[in-house]
Image (cartoon, rainbow, N blue to C red; front, side, top):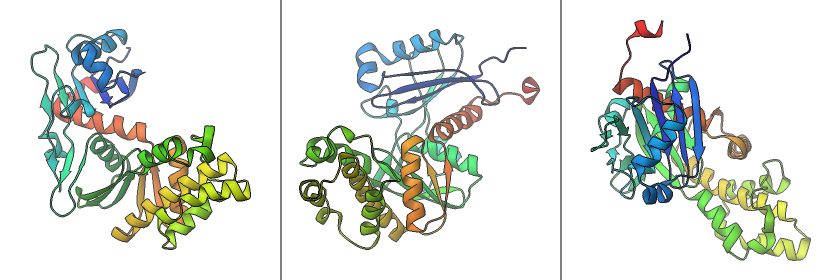
Length: 309
């Protein structure tokens, strides 16, 4: 018998839209990835965007859908407010919001918030966090989720206890494409390699206590005086930024790190953590968000075990 979809899972971000149809065990039966992020979907209509992609994948009209990401922001489809930390799976799911005014049962997972002396928020990463916790069977530890805004979460007794955010990816993009460093990096923006000697050298500077702001212009100077290549410049900038992030996170937290990342990002952070002397495990980011969404869906719409046999 051909497996039938039990849930639709969607990671709906600012610029990207991802949709998976999964069976009752969480196995992917179909998927769709597009550029229908917030801006494109707002103009077209969120419901119309979702329904068109579901129809393309052959989803039935009553298939429930769980959504995470910026679709639940104030600028998104419907705001799913933040759940304060410390938070575990039940408390996060208690904040899910059902989309009103449509026939299909669509729920949005809330983000996490942190008040007090270190105010912070996350949206979308909380679902990756759930997936990583379940994938690694974690109750305690440190979970790092690199990206445009990298998140480092302290997990204690199964709860996200507190977290930090680093604008590492956003700063890399801005400095590499809009600052004076663009003349040194040029078309090598996406060519930062963890194996380039400049990456390790820059990382070592940050871990030894140097200040990042005092080292950035050295990339430009090295290009003018020492013929630093664009690839070397990109690797050095990446090493400085990731090194500054890890140095700050290392001062706050100790213990084994679980990295939630894929592709180049996984390679860069894996190399950086290894060079910094931190032990780590790697969880694929796509797998983590799917698992987090699936667990949320199966808790909201449980399926009798007899139907899975």
